[in-house]
Length: 79
Image 1 (tube, rainbow, N blue to C red):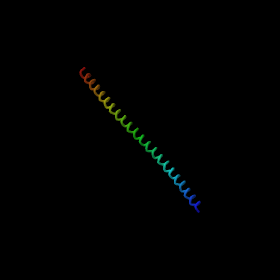
Image 2: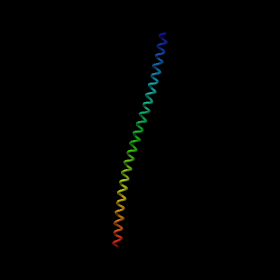
Image 3: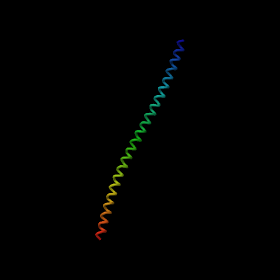
Image 4: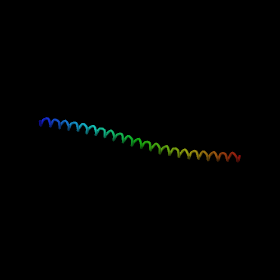
């Protein structure tokens, strides 16, 4: 009878160890998914900042062109 109890307990230990291993594997997958999401967020934030900088540079370029056109028009009118 003692052997049966030990055998049952051993089986329960093995089952619980397998469940713990599966839970640990799932936890690691979740960690990887979180890290991937965080990297994606960082990349998106970087791309947004670069796009904003580019938009600001283009606005300045448009203002410069507008100024050059207005100076050119003023010169043409004086001629």
